[in-house]
Image (cartoon, rainbow, N blue to C red):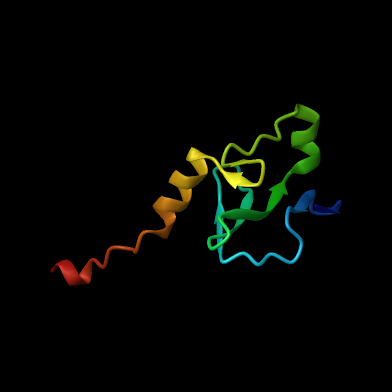
Amino acid sequence: MKLIYDEEADVLYVTLAEGMRADLTIENDSGDVIRYNSSEKMVAGVTIINFRKRGRDWNLEIPEVSNGRLTAAGENLFGEFSKPSHDLLASR
């Protein structure tokens, strides 16, 4: 695991599996970015915004990730965003 903190931006970059490339990224409702490797079915890393502020409030939960894997909430989030977008012109 590798942690890099950008104090000026108040962003923590967490790399869970160094060298693992992410082929999917998605932003959750908190603005955090989850980087996911779909072939390994592993979370490669997470970017946590407002880390210091949230750390003071002890609100660091990322419900989409647990032990390097996507939770059911994470699976649902990626499932929604990985669906092909509907082409409005094609339905006319």
